[in-house]
Length: 155
Image 1 (cartoon, rainbow, N blue to C red):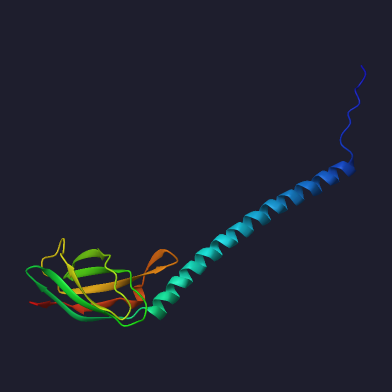
Image 2 (cartoon, rainbow, N blue to C red):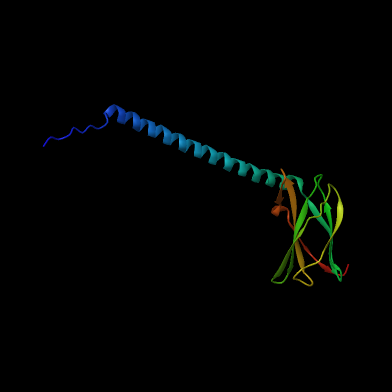
């Protein structure tokens, strides 16, 4: 019986194929790493912008915080020359809490009234007011600028 000649690929072609696969794999990995890095850098820049914006352009004061039969009333003062785009108010009474979003804008160096009707709490003891700032079209909560106030009975 006659054996057929089996031929493999030559060592030169095998080397060229290995180098080609290695270069292709390196290009794919490099492309993935660069897009991943750009994405992370963009997100980090967004976070830094909002934190810097909150730290440098927001300062609020509470002139009055009281509750009566019609709801809870705050008089807030914007002490900086930038607009505040709203607030998140956390009303607290013992272990109970009620979080309310207020989309009322507070202009630069402006004083305004904010009236809130609580959902789950009848008469809250205190409130934490967190200002919101719009940075590049996105709203950021400025947790480090939150202020806590005690609410008095009767306005």
